[in-house]
Image (tube, each protein chain N blue to C red):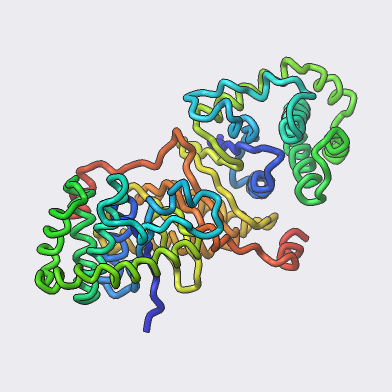
Length: 224
Length: 224
């Protein structure tokens, strides 16, 4: 069995979307395996958690209708994705990517309509999906385990990829690929950075020299 | 003429030290050229500059004996390094590295004693060095130009390397090398990250999974 990588994601983050697209290309080609894990930016950046050794404010302790927009929408999406994953690994991935694409590619709101559209796109059994979503306590327990592990690792942004050896870093990139050769290069580079004898802790662009974004035309070709 | 890289450094930062050591290996081998540039962490992190589009608090506007320890020591070191560089490029590098090593390898305070010891180690003409250091206004003007360019680029940490094409990023690594093959690999990887079609903006380790530090024995072998 191939040791699995983890990818910690948050549906509100476009970088997480591109990270999961990258992972999907590699897993579909059978080159890598990834587990979809959940990390909450709202929880990670919550003022009550600032400077705390462990979170005191948990997204999973909040009512579904509480808080500001990102809190509500991310909790909705996480729980729906946990429910989708109960129908199988592929269903979980298909739902996750459909929801990501709706929000970050089609620029739709992250809401109940988007969740149901993603469930349709992923060809979920909709009755089963509704039943699984009704198990709010059970879904929150699984989400809580992900959030707790993210906190233990010290995840602070999404996507954060965790390699089988335990190395973990936020990998933020501007461009989208669904092409295997390109995905392989970008993933290989991530591993090189984390395994370099330099002991690389951070590479981060200077504020006024941002990473170049590929032209839309080029993206369209890559994603065609 | 080989287009030059810039390395923005601050003497108070051990990561900047390792970055300049890396640059020195490559320039001595004739593989790359680097200009030593100054970026001030005290200025960059000064509360008066938070959220400002351009700095309002400048290190170069402060008296030499003002402020807290890092402010005083970094201003002292920057101006001394500017004076040393007036004796020639090699003298500037030798002084810079001697001062970095005193502080971060030998763990000495960054003070006037360390400056004079570094001047000796770099075999500066000490009378000339004293005369050049007396030109406080002239040295501050050159330092100011570096700090202004760092601000314009959006440098926020040291070392930040600027490539001839204008790409610029903070490159933080835990280990020291003075070995050419290793230095070449670490530098090549930096270029790969900045030139990747992914448009990599950030790679940063999760907080509780820090970059591995090489064992001291291994370091001793590398630096022997």
